[in-house]
Image 1 (tube, rainbow, N blue to C red):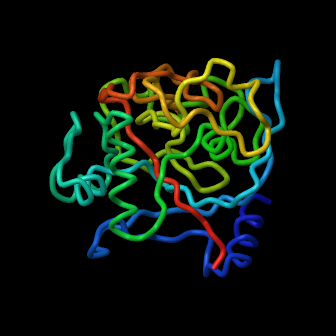
Image 2 (cartoon, one colour):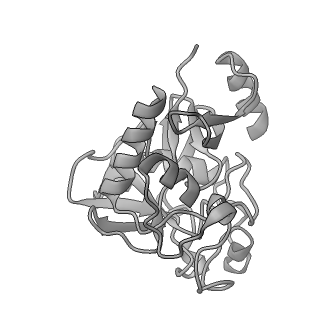
Image 3 (tube, rainbow, N blue to C red):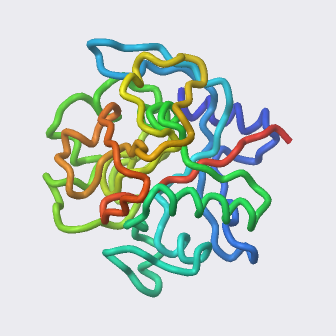
Length: 251
């Protein structure tokens, strides 16, 4: 059902597929694999106080978290604590990124390519994670099953791991939980579940920003659809990275 909607929207937008590789650098030598998310609805928050949210625009979202190779190709440096070299850098997520670093990466990738790369808004992130589900994890409610989709303390607690080695969700997105937590575009707002319900966006400016999904050093039970973490925009821990979004304007 989800894939059918992705394919239908790809056709509507004049795209050959709902999965594409987009260039990130000037020469087009380094690309990012993305999948198309159709507009849709989801229930935000936990089952005790669900709120129906509507997203009205299609969006390309990174199939994987941004890797060290991709980040270095755009920025010229690899800040990661768990630094990989050579071919391995293409398979491990970049980390030790502040929110400022993540935003700068999106800005330069956009300037390089003429595209509109950005971070996901928090509402978009939860929609992307859930992929049509209403459970705590995109593979159910059981804590003991969280390790099937996430690198986290129950199966790791050592370091980041290769992207794409756990089960994807129905949209075809990997590591939405665990591995590295992912910066969102929204500055922190305590009343997230009470905000507007059509294309909701939090403040774009602030000193504290949201990151979602939790990481390799998090309890697997927290690598769920609703857990929210707040961090100073300058904080750059070895458990925080990013996932790219890209405008899906109709051709």
